[in-house]
Image (cartoon, rainbow, N blue to C red):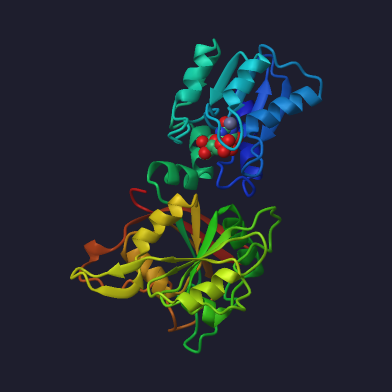
Length: 372
Ligand code: AOF
Ligand code: ZN
């Protein structure tokens, strides 16, 4: 069984860039004598699910799946969404047993898939939540799980700095602190996200495209700009075909809004207020995450300057950090996140290091906020 489930996880992992906002799922169909009959993975959102692709693969090879077992990295769906229910397709094909890693947290499914299979006489086995395959499947779809359970995206912040934590010199020079290998690795994290977030400061200073160029992908993540008073230039290079640019603002300007929306952007006003109820002139970042959850953003990949980074961290909105450290010292300059001086050590943000790896000459640290 392990080999088939390993294959299913491998299929879901290697094809993870296309399906968002759908979760990336893999399916392998086999027999107890361990011959593989078919395999598949989720296609682009709106396209067929993993189970359907695996059934088609088996049929295309002339393999009967009657009496076989389907290994799936998520509970087969029971609802009519953009596509039909996978449960029904598995039952109709004569599948005898389904092994799944996890329950689908989507309230439209949430156990109903398993119930429907069992009611049709299909044996169902769900892995223990601590099983490495169950963990790997959840990690792969951490944004989907976050959006379904918390109703907000999984927020991952990427920073590149020198070993002494400097992201830009005082003259603003910041490009290419880390290596080409680290930049390409950064694009794999961009590619799996539903949207990339930045701030107007970075837009004006760096003129970034914030798209995926250094790895192959069939889908560009959307872009989110925090731009309190709508200064986004109309010739910003990130207005590219097939992606939505969401611009969050606090101060209304009908003329700027109309000009930006003519380029295909979507302007959303979410003004923030201080404890006294006065407008801050800044975007309410917590409300922005709720709004992005409603817009089906699973993973939100943050690449911003130290001010916006600092605000997101201070407000407890960041779940995970991907930090690239270059083997050089750059002295004083801009830091990674301006969270301000803390009155006591106990108020620090406690993290767990999830992994440390060399990427070319640089060090990559993935750190997660404790409790997330
Ligand atoms: C599966 N297999 O490969 C995936 C599933 O709009 P639809 O029809 O594409 O349905 C999307 C929902 O289906 C999604 O929110 C999640 O609950 C489930 N994803 N289910 O059986 C798959 N990707
Ligand atoms: Zn399905």
